[in-house]
Image: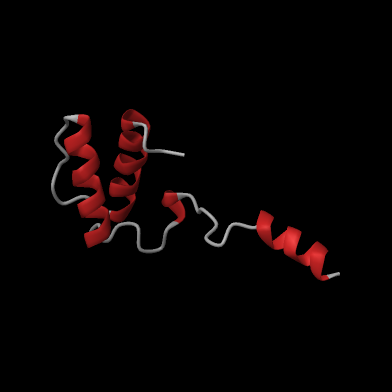
Length: 73
C-alpha cells in the first residue's frame, strides 16, 4: 500500500498551476522575486520590461521570456 501511495504522490505537483487570470491577488504589484527573475530574463533576452507590472502581467512576461531564452520547462 505504501508503494502505491508513493507513486501517486510523485504524480501530484506540490504547487499546482492556476491560471493567472484567476489569481485573487493578480492585480497587486509584482513581487520582489518576480521583479528580480524578470529582469534577469529580460537582460538575457535583450528586451526591456515595463515598470509597474502586476503579478499577473509579470507572470505572463516571465513565461514569454523563459520560452525565448530557453529557460522554460
